[in-house]
Length: 154
Image (cartoon, rainbow, N blue to C red; front, side, top):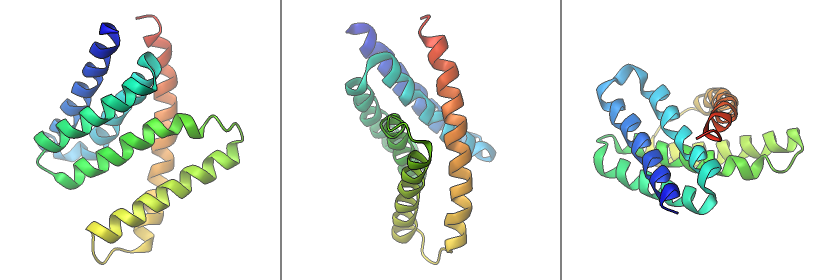
């Protein structure tokens, strides 16, 4: 149990470090945001769903406390929650249904985010974001697969 708590805390801390770096290295904000979300599925793989949800809550709270850009913090919380829900979506086993659900989740979250926080947005911005989201999902899958093989040796 202590190992799981320690690993989960390290995942939350690494997410916080990546998000803090977004304030320092402003040219790589999107990369660091996506990198910060990678640690949560690792917590899910190594420790289980309960610890992963606790890691998400802890990481999101720490990020909201310490990172100055609150919209970026909200984006982190949304992407981190998606990174954990991704495993549930992929248990369906039918690829086209999985992608339909993933895209529907993206459009719902992006539309709500833009409608609430960004006035005067364009639907083309959300559509372009969908292309970025698909790339994010594919890279996240590849990264999780690679790192889960490495983690099992730890």
